[in-house]
Image (cartoon, rainbow over all chains, first blue to last red; front, side, top):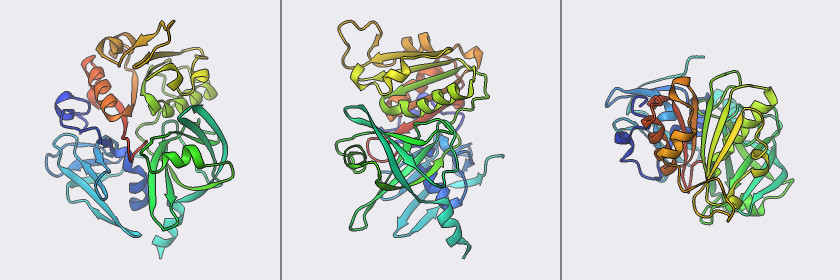
Amino acid sequence: MTAHEGTASADAALDSSALDGNAIGGLLLEIFGTEMTTALATCATCGSTGQVAQTVVYLQSPGAIMRCRVCGAVLVVVVRREETNCVDLLGLAALEPAPA
Amino acid sequence: MAGTAIRGRLTWQTATVGVVTDETPSVRTIELQVPDWAGHRAGQHLDVRLTAEDGYTAERSYSIASAPGEPVMITVERLDDGEVSPYLTEELRAGDEIEIRGPIGGYFVWDAADPAPVLLVAGGSGVVPFRSMLRHRERTGASAPVRLLYSARSLPDVIYRTELDKEPDGVEVIYTLTRQQPPDWTGHSGRVNAALLAEVAWPEDQQPASYVCGPTPFVEAVANGLVSLGYPAGQVRTERYGGAGGTS
């Protein structure tokens, strides 16, 4: 994610509803119990690593979708059913908290 | 269960609305009194949750407009088709209670101890986290030079204009007006483009810290422009907000 942040090639496909990982910082705080926007996320599809804040997030769908900024693969899906968050992390190879 | 205890501590808390200030005809700053506020960093945001009588809830993220150590403030732009912002900008009164969660985020933050020159590029209400940073700089006596490039539709749409026009030592504010300019306007006009960025941005070899906040297409264009000027791609910190959902 880091390597391609801001480059024309990676961003050309983004539509105007694309947000950053920051946009689900509160949701991730609720789920993981700690600040996650600076955590390092590694994409299981392309292997690139970047901070959660640098990923692409969409909130329009019924739930939140986090995608890899490099390859576009889905990293995380969170859907809320009443008071329960259903969390799918299968798109991640790793998710490591930021060094203190 | 442990989960029950964690839930209350980490998530929603009640804030009481304090002073409400009109910034422009469609933008309002809301002070929030939060008893257990953990303290925030310049550039962080918080989430607001509104619950309707039928239980329907809507959540939005808002950048924090005040400096660390000041009362918590958010600045909200009314979006006519929004679910949350019309209530916050038109209905909310001092003494009302709303639910908030935060502070949130460790990426789009500025540390006053960092001496690197700072480039801030704002589109519309994307200027909000930058007010927190500028006030933080002022309050801490930090010396990092700052340039704020602020794109607004017209002069009356400029948020915090009185405050920004003071330009303390080491701070430069450069406006560009995209839709309407006063007859005597001597500043920039039109959207932020490569030429304007080249004129305003610190040279890359000064290793500036750069922050871009605004609507998604604005942020895409500016971030790409900065990369074209040689800014390392991964080091342009961006915060995009959408029209509905997100930091609106």
